[in-house]
Length: 108
Image (cartoon, rainbow, N blue to C red; front, side):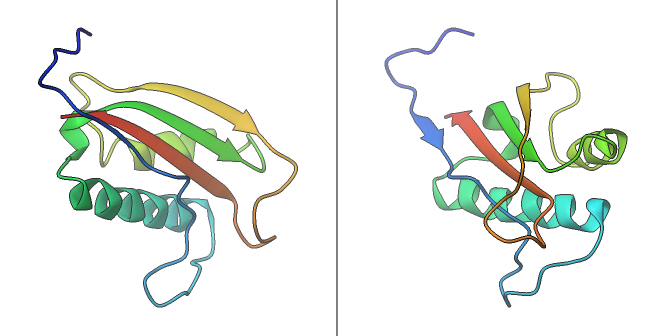
């Protein structure tokens, strides 16, 4: 990808699965979906969309549910030109109830 001088990079901080009401859903699919909704809101605030995302970094407490994480990710990203991704297995996140955290980089 070539970034021209008129482009702007948008970096999100890591998003966890706490909803706007502070409730953390149970299970991998619902937590991943909430994380992606939170990322979408952060991207929108910066004027970006999922089509602008070029890089995702995943932090997970277990790798057994990667097919679930990928399936939910595919509900949000551009499957014709998916962003590059890195995945890091961690011992824990901010709170023991969190299973996943994701950061995004977009170019607009």
